[in-house]
Image (cartoon, rainbow, N blue to C red):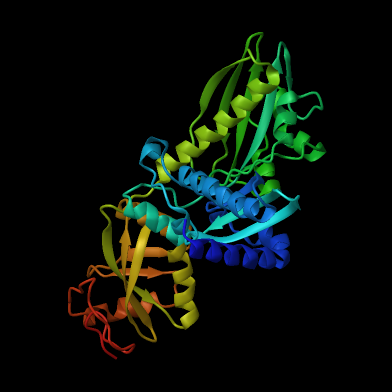
Length: 402
């Protein structure tokens, strides 16, 4: 490899080691759910080479490569695994946004550390788009899990001798696609779920949802038979009905109960992730576009709308065509159907609707769109090309002038 590449890599790592001394403590709180899609934690580096410095360089580079593979597998559909693009070390450094390095230990020839790698979302998405790969660009709302354990005539949940609950309590459930939260299992939770053990088919789901700020609950019911485990996963109380389906599996106990539960836990997470990705993966190989007007009264109105557009998973990109003191015109390029785009924007707090004259409006509240409706009669019906060039800020939009 070229010497200049190693020099650039060394400067990059030194910078982020200094940076994360101040930033790393707070990074877990700074990352949003969306950021977590592009962040890989728990990367353990243990490298031996001619010197500790060389071991450090190579070890961190290998950690970044592992993180790259994890992120691409996380974002894409399992059926596309063979299509994932490989990447050279000198290209990889351009995708990494920052590193967090902790627990460093060195000897004369050995280097050990724990590394967190965070990638640039737009760079990763562009890479996937350039390779015509569908990918998930949003995360599920979090769910609480109730690991119910049945053996013989006994059914337990919060008890200390529930091995299924103990398994989940010992796990670091780092699942960015479908975040899972294990309740405390205290007296409040016991009261909320008591109906599960009194012959009732329902329990106080709302109490759990409010306490843990989750979208719903997954019942993870495990039946321990002599030679195998039967596990059924049932979604309860979802805000958006039908986003997850019930499923079941059987796990052999040839390797023991602990290994069987571990296999079941991994399979559950993979199934939930795959279902979310199948339902929400986006593909921009054949993107559609729509020209919209955004009514505004202040610059902040536009910035609020822009922040929501930037996070929308079905939007490939948007082009700003014109901006005035009371309205913004832009072209939105999107995947999926127009109704799906409308639904996603609605969940983010934006309304996309078409007027009687065929004009598409996008707004966050009722401040500005009434003026557009009143002026609609003055629109000339001009068809605006997405490629139209804008030379000044004060420009007539859709044939409308003051």
